[in-house]
Length: 96
Image 1 (cartoon, rainbow, N blue to C red):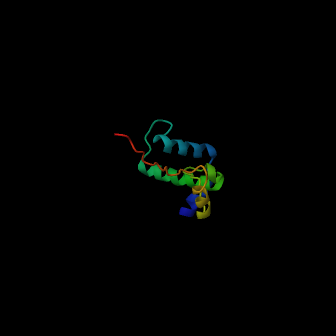
Image 2: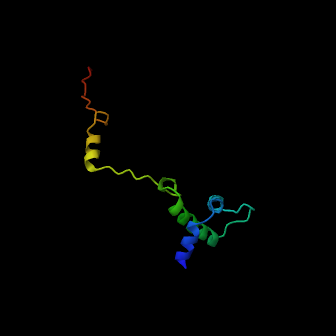
Image 3: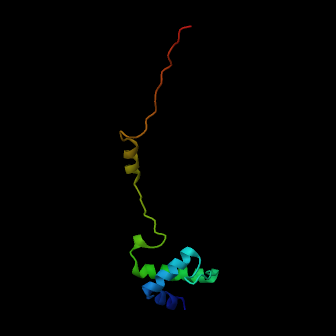
């Protein structure tokens, strides 16, 4: 049954997809009725399935860009001229 749900969700009409997404954002349907917990779960599954099949990854709900850098990149960044350097302050003698 779950496979059938996924296939149906991936073929949703784009208008229905937008209505599900908006209902999730607002917590209510276009007519003002509140979205129940069960409806929220089903809509979220449908939105995720639809986006997986029809929306580029970077435009999907919840997408976070992964910026990974190697240790070598981090080491060279830490040695750059723009990085913070400790300040050496010598104590001056005052006259009494």
